[in-house]
Length: 556
Image (cartoon, rainbow, N blue to C red; front, side, top):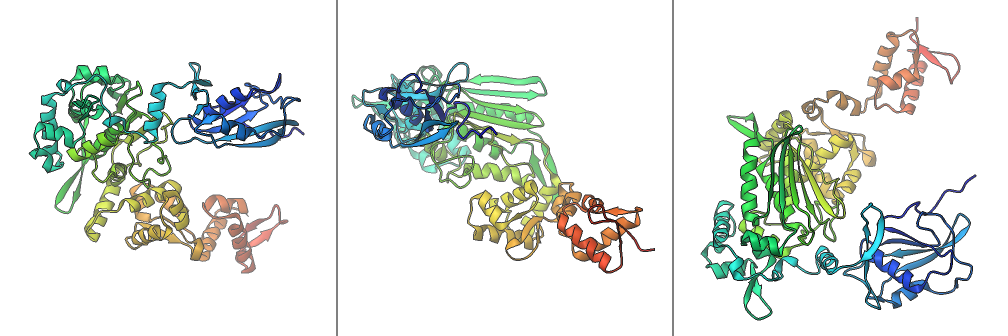
């Protein structure tokens, strides 16, 4: 019998194979292979495997007693802390190195740095690390704030007074920091980090300054990566297709104006008032768009893109993956972090971004309150963040339920409660512990929210003790037009199970256990067996045949 392969079958951005077949791999090449992985995401390095994944093992002359982890640490700057373990694969000896992704960049002692990347054909390779890579990595790991650095070659003449006026108007319109309106031009620029002291002591624009109030030509010259693509599609018909290279505030204004004709509203009546429900809540879009502009990697030659497929979804993508400490799994719980702190802070003070740093929370709230799916970040990668906002018609029945809750309780549903309802809709039935694990919140906090939802009639409980689980209530399922789904989730009492089995038996000549399981969705196999035995013991069913092929019928 062929033994199962224990190591990966192919190379990737986090897996590197090195041959030792023709002769022991040199220490120099081994060090560079480890440096290559460390300068990206880290990963696994296997010595004794060919590039195509063929296991050839260690060379017969290799000194097995050498501490190769120590060799690598002594020949890297800063010393690279890796682990080296001898392993067996396909009857061959290998060495498995586990390479961490360290803070900053790592070089060999002779000054060489390489980084794991994909070549033109999409295959993983190690290429020389450039100065841009070093800056990008430091920016990604928040070692430096690129946005506060002087823009190379820029002067104060590159700042546009008209854009500074636009900034002041934005502070008023978005209720930003009122004290900014009392400052003169020079004071305002200093307060927001739009200028800094250059090498000669003179004031010069920062990257943030050019991005917010710069003229377009110097902005293109100093930051060639800055661009915003905006597209509106109706089916395959392109309604809008624009690429903008101007300062951020003008871009935000123009895209807002171009979105407006496509925003439509549904309405619900709440008491004596009509509540509009737009297909694209302005607060959700603004937070997602401003997040993309403020947190993108401006050293990457790629645009921020906004694409709206009318009637379906609006997708925003930006170059630069999640910063260190943030991932798909902790978006709502990680402390606020920014790749460009000075730029992000300026946008908050102007009023364009959520001031407490919880903009992602606002996006989730806005969509879930409208009965739409939560924002989808699943297409994000290490190189890009992609968020998809549903713009399909709102679930008005669900919105009415949320509004009714708000009227009765005197406050809207909290984000955590909305997330609990969202998970229960997706996964049907969950315990408090399961909810807490998926939401990455304290179980006691989740339990309080679940109990409040239970009291308000939005969720239903099943079972007792530690096995107690929760589902959406019947009226919430009805709002989703899924009354049958609710029926399938409800735990039937023994009496109800007996009644429904007898109804089934009355409609057929013979009843099989399989028929019971198909008809009573959610009933476990052992529950069906016990119920049939119970009815037979009471004389309400008659068993026919052996245990494996046994059938049942009503007594004459």
